[in-house]
Length: 397
Image (cartoon, rainbow, N blue to C red; front, side):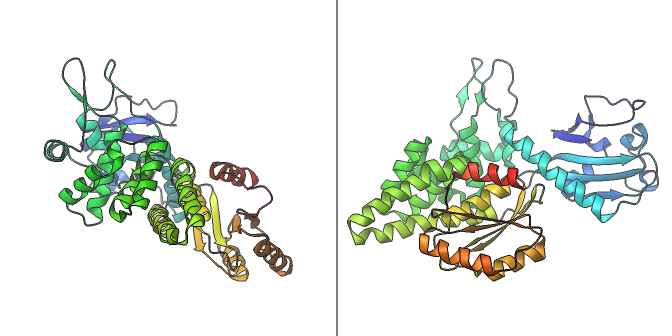
């Protein structure tokens, strides 16, 4: 069963069950459910026999669903909020083994990925989300959201014909951005000032953010640049943020560097801001639903931003992405991929001489039997856009 929390109700979103068992599509009050404990603890709940379990044996759901064996995994959003559960139920007592728990966790990661990519349903005739929906999406309480709106102006709601506030996806993105800054140790006043100072308050399009980033590099304003890069990855998916915002900005800054060596510091400033953001995204580990990918730059290769972005995209697509970074020895990369039983080893190279050296080392090396080795980067025969590379890897493996 896939169950979704809606305020104090647990809704049955999807299920497969014996025909004699009838489920109420309206769900059950959350306090009546076994799943409440997985939601509250944000940990898998493993029960061999619910009828004898002191915590859940008297719950209405235990009786109504004839539950004995129960295994429930919380559906955790990127912010750590439990949005619901994925659970398996047995009418007989059952000892759940480690593989069954891992399988359900992997499936739960796929379920929450689909949920978070699906726009929230709107009330008929009302555009946007009400404040309760924003609170559920972001994990920030409605009272706090109202305070932020009044004191700092971080939310800019539209009004329905009846005068009710409605918030759009950009409001949600701004709240998520502020939430993440608070987790990093910023005070709300400092984070709100960052958000208010940067050009992203008026420029949310890819072209507007790209131009604002280039302007922040030219000043240079490191604080504003960091906020703009954060905003690019908050308002847009990774592929769009990299290929339509930060990569063109890097090319523009790079062209200026060719005209004058004094601009090389600007290029490094922007590269480091992008690299830092990508590493934060990569640290959000998910289960390997599609497979395992090891990614490394070829020996001598220092340009890693493209490969780092690919690692983040693969992770978002359901892969376990193991990133080794720049100038990685081929032998070590191959050995690690073999020990992990990786499905694919991605090697990045940007110049013909490094490509020739890499090909020589690969021809002399013992390649892992179960691992496909793929060479990409600017020196590859057919360079691909990031989204195309992810799709190609999925098809090959």
